[in-house]
Image (cartoon, rainbow, N blue to C red):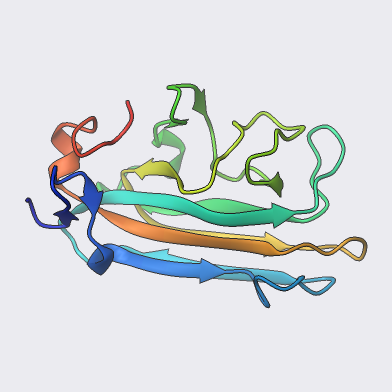
Length: 171
């Protein structure tokens, strides 16, 4: 397999390229008035971006286009130095495009939300191509408390940059 991949078909990202991030107190209910930002940076200059795997996710949903508790991905820089506004859209496993950047993400994994995001499933991978660094922003309010989130962040080896559909990726 190329560097960063493993498995019988070389279609799994190696755990060496993985970091785990959780909301405070996960999987127990989070506290009220949480406000946290975690910065994530590519460590390998040969990587072509990131992929996020949703392991567990339950944050208080809100009304249409409004989350009471939420997670957001704030892009900071790109691998080629271009402005973050030029980042490509993201795609779900059905090929449906959406924009995950600076979007409040809430609800529960496997349950349709009130927002313009796909219904994420357990272990769903979300590609963040061309991203060099980003913040994971998390906020909660005073009302309901939920489990929070558990996500794995993978650095995607540069071998995916030329052909993003290889190694089990979605186009």
